[in-house]
Image (cartoon, rainbow, N blue to C red; front, side):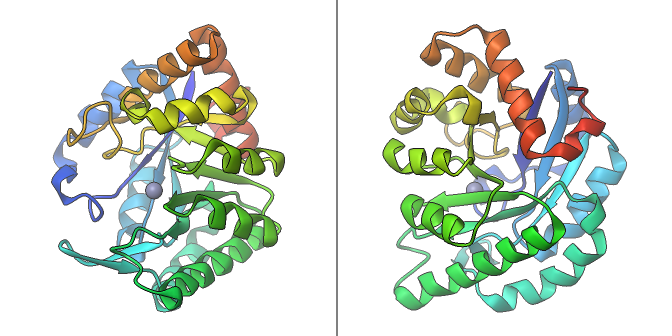
Length: 273
Ligand SMILES: [Zn+2]
């Protein structure tokens, strides 16, 4: 039994655009691979309806997370940092579906130079994250957090805001910074790209298994670069973590499932602890 996280980011990686026509097959293959539940994670208000209808089409298997990502697409070619205006379209829909959500996400900070050119851009992303951290608190939901080139500022901001439940997904910062998150009780999810990422391997060496979850980040971050990733690949993360940690695959599966249930209690509907 495994819980994973999956997301839509065709906007970020147009080359990995996921055609919806094979969704049945993707779901079937993930069930065959032993998955009990998937999180579908939004990046902007324009895809909230799609995420909600996926969760209604596969009830008790696909669970929705809604949030505004720190990078927003103007067009497939053009992306910019998120601003408070991007929240205007998102907030009424989050309010409408609040009882169905398992987390607010994907939220976070992305200080990749092509998305932020100055401190104003960074501040704007901070404000969007702070507002969503408040909403998560009001709704008693965890945060699903993206950080890129912003590991330290992201963890510091979460702690400053008093965030208690957070998943740092595909964390690209230093292990020492991640350990500050561990002290705050945060979880870190590890994608299948760990097999080709020395940074993720170092991270897993340091992180206690009790703070690790599995994710695929489909369609990105698969075992092979530029090949569409799918939830069934979650086993690649589990196997690699078991090798690094020197524990059995069963233990990795069991502990990461329990971690996912602690972080996302609503998954108990799909996975009996
Ligand atoms: Zn992300």
